[in-house]
Length: 206
Image (cartoon, rainbow, N blue to C red):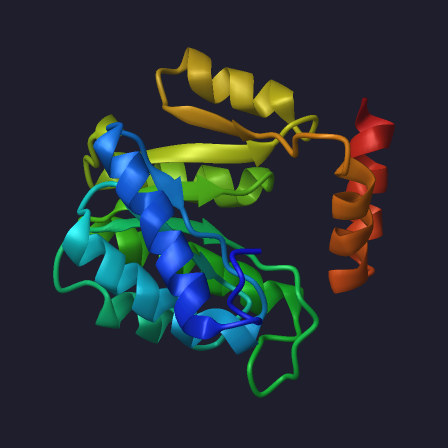
């Protein structure tokens, strides 16, 4: 989206300019993560941006990738800002966990690892079991409420998000915005056809 496939240096520089403007305004940019072809360049850029604009940029780690725990460890030399997601791309089994149970286990481990390392942690999931596990860990280790937040897509389990908000936890709703929403929707389905079941369950529960 920022042009990295056209020219890597140009894409990185355009993203840096965006983060710089966010820092000037006292705002924040979360660099999203695409499939594994972009993991190294994205995390390397994130490290560089953080050194220039600490506190104004965050990265995403995907639990379905086997490497994410090592990536998090390598970036834990100082507290940073991470969003933990399960991941949605169809990757080969040497790169990604093929079984959902393994992805879930890795997700829980990444959330714990991030919180234990002192990172601000965005716990992005609609899975109430993952949320419950995170809350038990947070309470057991007395993690302050200003060190994490819960994130969900708009329209998915908003009741659960409201309940977390009522309990005093910081929450955030992710809203695809604009006229090109259908292209976004079909792209997410193309990444992993199993996402169709995810959307269907959400529609049925409404």
